[in-house]
Image (cartoon, rainbow, N blue to C red; front, side, top):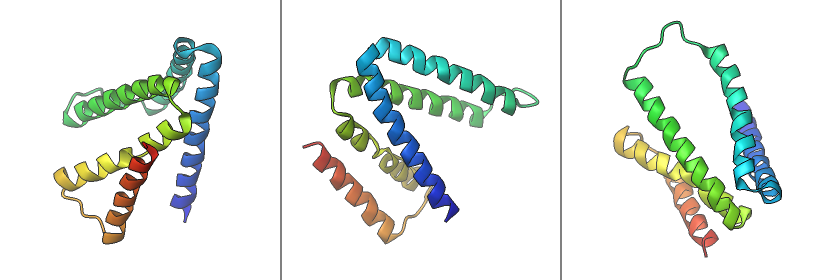
Length: 135
C-alpha cells in the first residue's frame, strides 16, 4: 500500500508541475521559463551529486547506459516544453503520460519480462485512451 501512496504523490506532483509550468511559461515566455527551470534543476542536481558522490569515478556499460537514459529524458522534456507552449496542457500532458507503454514494450522485447493479462489489458486501454485524447 505504501507504493501506491508514493505513486499517487508522484502523480500529483507531476500534475502540479505541468500545470504550473504552463501558467508560468505563458506569463514569462518559454526562454525565461526554461532558464529558471534549469537553474533550479542545476542547484538541486548539485545537492544530489554531492550527497551521492561515488568514491571512484568510472566509465562502464552501466554508466554509459545512464548517460543515454539521461540524454533521452532531457530531450523528451525539452520537446514537451515546446509542445506545451502551442497546445493544451490537458491534452499534451495526458497523451505524453503514455510513455510507460514504450517502457513496457521494450522490457518485454529486450529484457524478456512478462506481464499479466490484466496488465496487458491496461496497456491496451491506455493506448486507446491516448488515441481518443488525440482526436
